[in-house]
Amino acid sequence: MVNKQKLHSIALVSAAMILVLISTADATPFANIKSNSDNTVSRPRSVSNVITATINVGDNPTGIAMSPDGTKVYVSDHDENSVYVIDTATNTVTNTMFVGEWPESVIISPDGKKVYVVNSYDKKVSVINTKTNTVTATAKVTGLSSSSKIAFNPTGTKMYVTDCFNNNVYVVNTKTNTVIATVPLGAKPEEITVNPAGTMVYAMNGNNVSVINTKTNKIIATMTGFSSPDGIAITPDGTKVYVVNHDTSDIPYNTVSVIYTSTNKTEVSNSDSHKLSSSKIKASLSKHKQKTTPNIIK
Image (cartoon, rainbow, N blue to C red):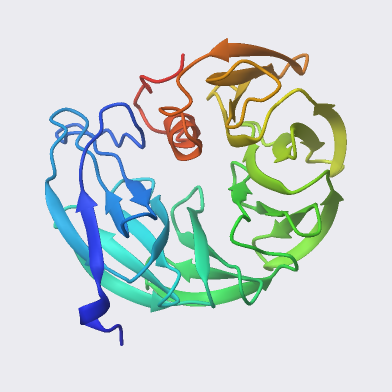
């Protein structure tokens, strides 16, 4: 059982510029933002920018994801080896699941039926059934770390996992939870995204972005000229990929690079990189099925 004296807070706060906007007919959009520095997760109300509630969670929240219908938020706790389930209607923790050691990234399958949690210490991905809130399977993936990220194809049948230690992307069959292909990449692949058609994967590695053909699991192009990129997202129509340049030593400061997917040519756009961080750009563009229009990038 989690020691309640060690519990920290998830604050439901709001910063209008960000982010996972959940739109319903009679509800105000919220955003969910994790902060490692003060062990909180903020949930912004995008209209009023006020704290609406505070929820107790574990000692070191590290990952966060929201269900496609916006009714649940899943938060991983690195120190307690747990995942907390928050009911967004009542702002209460309704379940706690114990997963592997050092859970980090959290992602939900496109159909909302499963939650996948990267456990960086034991190199496994825990699979949680969202209906029963139980761990139903684990996938052994060599090379998982705190920087490992996951992306799904649109149907949820394949999961792409980055490995910054061995410089690979692993393709996992989500039916069998086994690695079916390994794609070697450049230095330290981390952030990753899949186009809406499910035909191409875009993976950051070093100062490059590589394009993987999902039919052959081969790299078909690599774009260079980025500078310590730390965020990547693709538009809902799949025509553009946006890459945040975090440390711009080779290109102008405060920039976002745009990749045109039809030609794989890039250009640099001026922006405020402090506002367009990794989590923000991903949240603003990755929710293809939501009926909201992100007000960050057009």
